[in-house]
Length: 131
Image 1 (cartoon, helix red, strand yellow):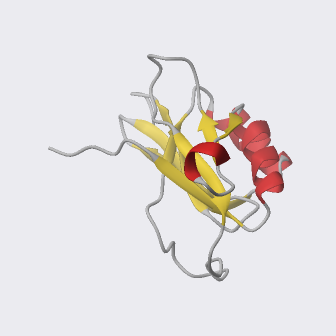
Image 2 (tube, rainbow, N blue to C red):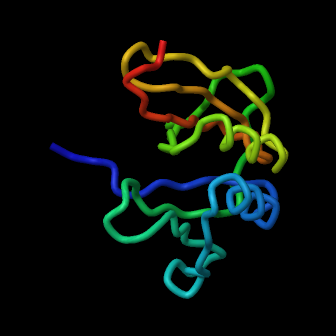
């Protein structure tokens, strides 16, 4: 079976996107331009052995999705320890709610947001008591 091993975030303003994801999730970035031959930032999401996969951040090569239209790519969901605190950081960093916090009964809290670049992403807080 094949698994997802890398993700990419496309941005109109790479520096703005780096700031957004640093504030929202505490991510850091490494310049991988020398590896890729074009401007490309590796996304460091946490320590070895923690849940998640590595990603990349690069300048968008085409138009962003229009507001009010569905996502036009894979939508990644980030597992978080505290949904409400993470939502506050996302909103404070300039993100917007796309779909509010919803209980996946007996499993988790889930919601979707729009980043500063018009991309959709989700957050997910495991919680067997979610109702």
